Every structure is written in structure tokens, then in C-alpha cells.
Image 1: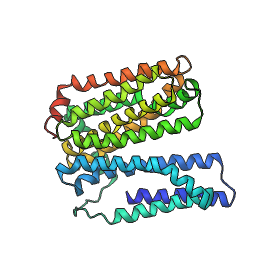
Image 2: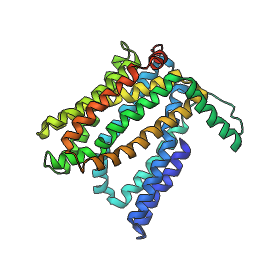
Image 3: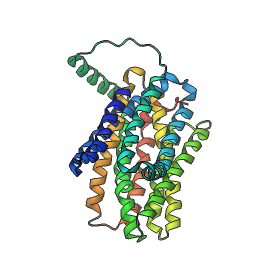
Length: 329
């Protein structure tokens, strides 16, 4: 996590330097953005692996919920802070402040106390063996493979419309400008905060696997509702309810992996999950763009929402998946 933050500090620091010395270009910004995303693929799986080391087993649901809430609060407050920051610091040094925020993160992470572990020196050959061992573990844990397939299938349907489709929906169906899109995104982030709280409460009475599948149904069917929406306010309300389903999926899935996967394999499994989410996001965005050449955006939301909700059948009809998850609460 610290190494990831150090690299991201230097990457973001390049931006104000490039602006001041007038060598900033769209290509440079694109490369920096790509590398920032690449570094994030190290940070988030590592964070999810760290939580069980500093949290008791029974506290995992509330810890994961708190992580999601903090992330969504940053999405809500980030634009506000950016607006204030531009007026005070200007655009150039807003990026300077952003770079410094990674140093603050490094300081906070360095204060975390974790159990001492002896780490063997690994050669390239041992890393290859480690990778093979992780794949072999997934094959043996048949239910874990189903969880990965479930994640892949659901994200193929959902992620492209979430990133690209909503902007098109605002433009083509609501015939509005960016401000309505911003309100919809803020409503979804607010729904995610509420959903994180609901997860924490529901975890006391329902199994994690049931919360995960319910979240997928909410995630899909609320997108289908956009087919019937013509009003700005109704669209914002639908996105709020859509947001509720997202942490039910994310937090339940994270907690499941933390509980059923031993320390030895947890990092590899979280990395695979993160790659599945990021990879399917790129694929889904591409498929969404191609589909919109032939299908209206409201009809697309109707279809993909139903398909995303039906992905829950993969879990419901997988005996290995249900057996794997039944003792996790």
C-alpha cells in the first residue's frame, strides 16, 4: 500500500510541474492516468488483505462497511473540495494538494500495527510456483470459482452502462446537461452510504451469500427501471436505490473472501477479483458503445438490468457455492 502511494505521489506531482513548465499534453495526462489506475490495482487488494489482520473475525462486516462509506463520502465531498481548492489554490496547485494527499495516506498507513510475519525471499521461480498454487487453490475450492464467474458475469452487464450509459441516458432521454448527470452520480453515492449501513444491520440476521445475491438483484432491476423514466427527479431517485445494492455486493463479497480464504492465498484472490472487475469494466464499456449503435439507451438498460439480476441464478444453482458460503456468518 505504501509503495503504491509513493508511486502515485510522484505521478500526480508530474502534473503541476508539467503545467508550470508548459509541457503538459493530452498524451502525458493519459499516460499518467493509466499508471495511476495500474498502481491502484496493487493498493486495493492489499488493503482488503490487511483488514483481517487488524480486525477480529466478527468485526469484518462493520470494518468493510466503514471502508465503503469512507470511499463514498470522498466521492460526495471530493468535487466540493475540488471546487473550493480551485478558487483558493488554482488548478495547477490543486494537483499539488492532490499529490500531498498521498503523503498523508502514507503517514496514516505507517501508523497501522500488524502482526510480525517472517517473509521468505522469493525468486522468480518461486513466484511462478506461487501463482500456480493460487490457481490450483481456486480449482479445488469449486465454490470460489463460482464467485469469480458470478462477479465476471454481473460486471459485464452492469459496468459499461454505469460508466457510459448513464451519460448517454441523460443526454438522449432526459435531454439534460452535465449537472443532472452529477446529481444522479451524487444520488448513487448517497445510496451506497445507506446501503453500507443496511449491510451492517442485515449481516446480523442474514447470511453473506444471501445479501450478495439480493444486492445483485437490486443492482440489476433498478437499472431496468430507467426504461420507464422520463423525469429528472425520478431518475435521481432510481439511482439512489441503485446505489443501495452496490455495497451489498461489494462488502458481502469482500467479507466472504476474507472469511473463507486463508491468509496464504487471500492476496492472490483479491487481485484476481480486482482484475475481474477492472477487466470486465473495460470490456463492458466497449460492448455498450457498440450496442448503442443499434439499440436505444433506455431499452439497453431494460435488457441489461434483467440479465444482471438473472446472474444470481449462477449462485443459486451452484451447490458448491452455497456450501462454501453457508458457514461464513
